[in-house]
Amino acid sequence: MTINKLTASFGKLENETLSFHEGLNVIHAPNESGKSTWCAFIRAMLYGVDSGERARGGFLPDKQRYAPWSGAPMEGQMDVTADRCNITLTRTTRTKSAPMREFTATYTGSNVRVDGMTSANAGEQLTGVTRDVFRRSAFIEQGSVAVSGSPDLERRINAIVSTGEEETSYTEADARLRAWQRKRRYNRRGLLPDLESKIEDSRRLLEDMDGSAENIEALEENLEQAKKECIRLEDEVTESRKRQRRESIETLSRGRAALSEADSEHDAAMERLSECRAELRRSAFEGMDIRTVEQKVSADLARMAELKGIYKKKVSPLWLILCFLLTAAGVTLYTIYDRIVWIAAAGVFLIGAVVFLALYLKARRAAADARDERARILKGYGVQHGSELSAALEEYRTLYASVLSAEENERVTRERYEQARRRQEKLEENALADLDFVSGSSPAARLGRELNAKRAEAEHLSAQIATLKGRLSAMGDTMVLRSELGMMETERALIEQEYEDISLAAETLRSADDELQSRFSPELGRVAAEYMSRVTDGRYSQVLINRDFSAMTRTGADAVAHDSSYLSAGTMDLLYLAVRLAVCKLALPEGEPCPLIIDDALVNLDETRLAQAMELLKEIARERQVILFTCRKTGDGI
Image (cartoon, rainbow, N blue to C red; front, top):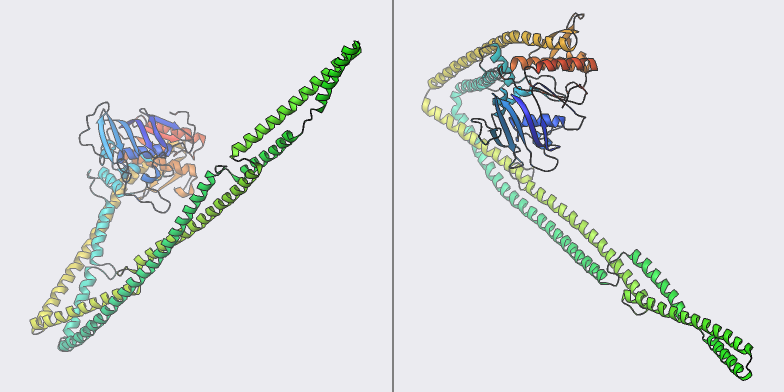
């Protein structure tokens, strides 16, 4: 199988696409750019998203971790080539609780569905392995280079080294045998301890047969006492539950009354606030900020005072009249005496009269403009006089103060309401706990459990009495009981023999598994050693792999192999990368190989070993598609 193209609405990816080709694909991108998200998307498209996973300490399931940041549904499309056919896988989301549950697999470019391919089996059909084996072999997540064991991987390995049957796993078979052993004997539990207890009871019963009548009498006396105790407890339980219900109802009623009162106070405060705001908006200043209003009114009052000074200023026409009189006098004297000097004087006085006339008219026009401007200012506020404007300002201050007071009152009553609501929720929660008469901690619940225990005791006593009476009436002598005891001892011997046989089977299975491991581990170690030698330029020549897939390696100069914890981070990554590649080669199906997905597994390598690792991946890419996401520059990339 090869992956050709991805289209994803997944995590930070918003309808983004990514294309691949056969061989080695290197996607170089910086951290936080979505490399790990693309890897998770490939796994989700193949095997789906497990909607049953739940968040736990430090772990987020894929359905939460990769929910699209944009709030869009989680969905995507994958174009692959498998069995020489181009196939398009599509996964969409109908409900948030089941992301990417809706699945179709069609032949690319058509609506023809791929027969037999479903959401559950698509990954296994295309890769040839289960999700578990895929994640432990060809899917190398960031920070998870090391291989871990699993029943699925064991079954796959067993199939390779034995008959090809993938239905068996040593871990599961061993666990089943251990479960059978525990069923027969596990500490003080199991069939054997239970049977031994019954045998011991029967033996004691045989020893006590002579006094069985006395035992029955004592048991009946105890039963009578238990019944009386049950009656007493029933009365106490009834009364206690009534009292608990009454107290809970009273407490809830008081809480509801307080909540209703707080709600009414808040509603009244809200209504008062609305009224104050409405009055403020209906005022001359239409709800403006008080500081803005004060500044504007102060400026307008100052301007009005200035304008008043302008139009109140008296402009005397005395000089104008005097100039006109002097002009007339000059003309008259000129007429009488016919001397040029008088006509010249009359001209001068006439010019002076024109000048004074112009000044007088200008002053009158300025006064008129001042009156008009003052009238416009007063009209803008809807008042007639400056005193009315000052009064309107004072009234607005009062209204504004009322709004602020109403807002403060609303805030206080809202907080009081929220406190009352939280108190009521707590009271309801406590009431539910108090009214839980089965598993609660209230006195009524404790009395109820005590009553149940006493009833169980009475039932147990009744059963014991009935058993003793039945045995006594049926036996007549000890022969029947001795016969039962012999049968139980025979059964115990059989179970003990089964226990020994199961122990032998477990030991035999362990030996067989050790033999399987001895056949597979060396081959896995040999292939891993070849890869390790390639990427370390022959420095590490041997790799030893344990049952749990932990690995050790050594150089030619080392006397013994070293555990991976003694290696540097880069060398340890190379070691487990070699093991991963060996698992891929030996454990994955032959024929059409599934792609190898690697997420930043080379981040700890120096430049030399990075180049050697890339050469190895190029060689592997001749046989299977390799998709490497990395933040390191490798020389190749998409």
